[in-house]
Image (cartoon, rainbow, N blue to C red; front, side, top):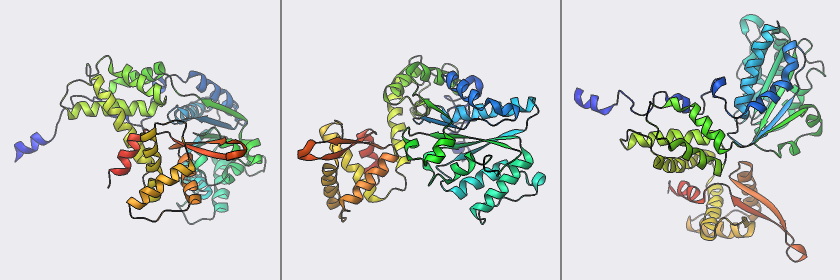
Length: 399
């Protein structure tokens, strides 16, 4: 029995030396932030007054997923706290993941809890049970009692259910809610059109400075992956593996997270194949796996009809090529066929339009408005942003 147990587990990992370096949650040190010197410098300039105890600019940062927005915001905030401390200014930052804390109450509770120290303030911030206004009152008291300057990072700000917390935070000083503490907001969004949905009053106070983070190019992605190559044992990575992964990722999305995922998966494929090296050929397999896992995560918890709509788009894309998308009427016709095959009653055209909008909001599809002239009027085209093969495989794997 003991021999079997010994054979079951590998005590020595032949591929990875420190796999944590390839995890999405891993925050690299200063030397590992690659290709974002200009963006870091611009962000630092915007919040620079804070090191003297003055109000930092409110900033809105745009850019696609995996372009280093959160990474740079956290890095600049950490450096700000250190530098302000050298100047005798007490500073901190609070981080809110708005994809998780979508309501005003959840977000303000998270901020208050992260900047509080009960022993210092004697103020309690329970997980729930207080009104939104009470959470705010306690937050303002904590800020004035403990800090000269606080930065609030609102990540995926477009996932908030409304703009109310943006109004409160961006105007807290002006409204006299805080008197001894200066407050700055760093809003981060994957959607460049997010600002168009904002309340005009919020827009004027929150968007003092705006920065766009472009996708990484192949050289930057290559440098990012090389900076994390010590996740692998010496000599394990074939020379062509990282360049291949960088070229693939740059051509498709310029997303550093996905590029790092591809590298990690390639290592895992090498492990499962019993290979002593991470070969270039594993990168292509890893890309497919990374795309599949990402899409599976995106649609987790979605309703059957939400999936049928995506399946309809995948069927059209595979049979006719991606083109420039497909009209709502065509998607709906295929969707109705899928419903019949599944023995399910189809939803109304209006409801399917809503589902398509939801998928566009999640960046699974892209919508474009067109004019067909006086004969046809205006119409909307829908195009999958995901690989239709991946979409089809994931949507049919549970059947």
